[in-house]
Image (tube, rainbow, N blue to C red; front, side, top):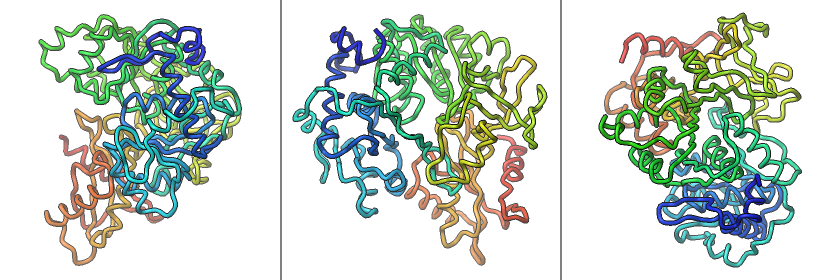
Length: 511
């Protein structure tokens, strides 16, 4: 059988989730997820309503994701590393009616609620008490484990970059179809990577509040695989989990490859990774040398894809990449990939241009609240993620720039405009530019160049003051690793900041 709910009905004792201390069966997982769904419904969350979710990797997170999938609810996954201001923006912008938090990571969410009027009225906490929140475990205990009504497909609404300096939701109308249809789509997606129904084991290696890890984990369950869900990722812990659980497949980002390769030679040599069959990576460019070392260690099991929450995508099988190091592959079935020049014409093989995807029909998404970004991403029935690349004679795609301004650090998107907004709002700052610089560990690190206001000296004291402001208002990974001062910043006549000039100067300096 294919699909979580069918498996739970026919093989309820089959292992679905593997935790450090115990396993959870398909029957138990579906029953608990349905109690979560019905607890949300009993509290007033209806079809299409938004629920913000601030949870680290744990069993409760899996239950909430599956509850949403079966009950027609839309959830906004929120990193628990975000600070109050960032969480408040997401709750207000998404018009969230509900909020679920982990008591151990609730500080940002509590601060967010105190800073906005109204906000989510349905509030649940897990793993501890939070003032003003109902314990989700107690609500589950009082709720039915029957299928929720209406039983329709729900899902996440992820946020991506926006022209205003704040993330924007990739919004699609709610689908009015049974959840089994969504499960079938997930199974079809997994088949692109030679993953089939069976008794395999999937390791959740990244936070489930990100799109790809969540999608891969849930698709694994729909395939009948069991998933290993550690709360925290470490390189040694990953090797231990692979050996202990005989892990067959996982999703990772290149920074994790770096961390694994930093382990002592004797540790890597002793690691048993013989069970691995499919290791997929994406989210950030992977240096050719790093990927080659991983292939040399783990064998030809490492796949790559290039895609966005918006849709479309390419896949590079291990043999594809070994034949053409650096390629992100060719378009998925049902998807077309185009490289267009500035006039909208198809670029010749080897010629750089903007990458566009087509999905065989009208574009089915928009950036919520940002019509300018929505329109700017489209050419007819094609859409772009804003990346630059080229195709070779065989149609294999190569990336040259993972978005012009986007910083990808540790596989996580960081939006320069958001950091620039914090810096520029400081009374001692006249202008600010933020961009990414190469980083051996993280892929990119955040660099800021600030033009002090009139009469203000750019010194160590101002640097500490500005970094303190960033620490207070931004997640840690967004805080600049380097902050320098300039008398002026390069702006064009139209007012647009020409950051490439700055970035090229820093690149010329070398590491």
